[in-house]
Image (cartoon, rainbow, N blue to C red; front, side):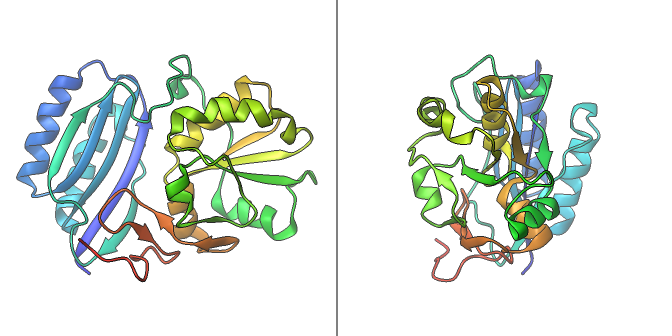
Amino acid sequence: MSVVNISCYKFVTLSDREALRADLVRRCLGLGLQGTILLAPEGINVFLAGSREAIDAIVATLWADSRFTDLQPKKSLSAEPPFRKMRVRLKKEIITMKHPLIRPEEGRAPSVAAATLKQWLDRGCDDEGRPVVMLDTRNDYEIAAGSFEHAVDYGIGIFSEFPLRLAEHRADYVGKTVVSFCTGGIRCEKAAIHMQETGIERVYQLEGGILKYFEEVGGAHYRGDCFVFDEREALSADLQQAAGRVHR
């Protein structure tokens, strides 16, 4: 497999999006990359595929910008690029929640690393003995591909439905530790901040999402595959295209 796929994001104020877009378009096309980069006032979201040399070059370009030096791309391999073109798009939000007062750049919710979460799930409680609830913040069609064992989900069709559904179930989390999770970390980061703001006492976000969990500890306590927003459709716990999925 010769194609390297990366995804990463960061919540950071971007006031030069037009110039940044032009620079990234030029650089990505010059490197022969395919994929999508989203730029919003609240930050950047990156999904790219290309040769190892091209990926290393674009990551170096991003790291050279002081705003992006701490980007930590999640990597997987594929036989072919799972994208058909290269796009750099300007958006209102890099993930739409329609809660403009939620600004992750101003303070994140606590995160839990994959290895620590696995330990919690192995023994059924966190380090303080609290029951752990896994809360899937993804959409229903994503969850259909797979999720953590016994995870709670609200069957939402779009992420902007999450706050209302959470309000209906807020009491369910009293005395428990809630770990929000998603594919790569971006939605569960916003969701965790929102849960904190609604008064839920003990909330964590899964650092790096499901893909980082797969990368660091494999598929323990996870059932099925992880839906991804490219032509591979879903990845198994070994970060390969899931069996039965046809590259289109």
